[in-house]
Length: 255
Image 1 (spheres, helix red, strand yellow):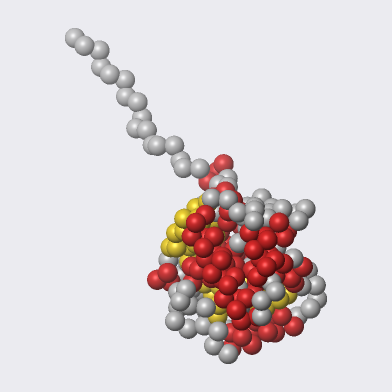
Image 2: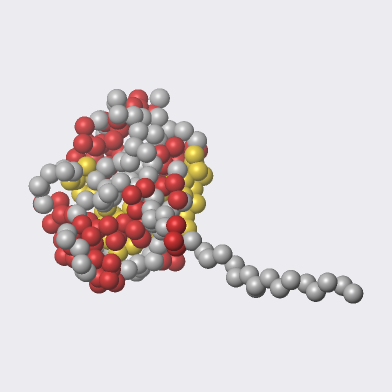
């Protein structure tokens, strides 16, 4: 049903099409989800770089709703233009398209320019949706944008969108929506120079910075979502010491 509505909306001119799609999507989110936004007090008044985990094609609009009335430009894969539903979904938010896993740095330049022009930008450093719901290793471009822009970085954790609009690798344009509870959690802003202690001796400083950034996202998430950024399990010799017992003194026989 919803896919047919998107097909009809696609014939409208750009401006009324965007307004109609946003209205339709707001209605779907209102009817099919409950939403919880945590940490809005952490949102800075200045332009910032949001970094977030990526679970579903519903992520962008979910975050757009959570940020209102603030706005952000979203970096999104060019593949989303290949179907009517995903193309109109990206039109409903301000989007900078990128080719994941390519050497094309033009979108990174545009993201940095957008930040320097006074607009916030939101990126999904993993470069694609997680098929397990858990974090996968992020791409180095995240730290490059952060370094060049020099703006505060705000970690964001999403949960629930993988259940609301599950991935369908057979046909991305026919993905279904289901009733779900969505949670968006904003962490405290930080700057790259605060991560120097974690990355000082790394053989790959850019990847190390990106990984340190993503650990701030993981800290906001339930353990089952943390994936490769989960803290290491404590070693056996790090276990809590056994309680100290006073030496046993034999009791005196009664007389």
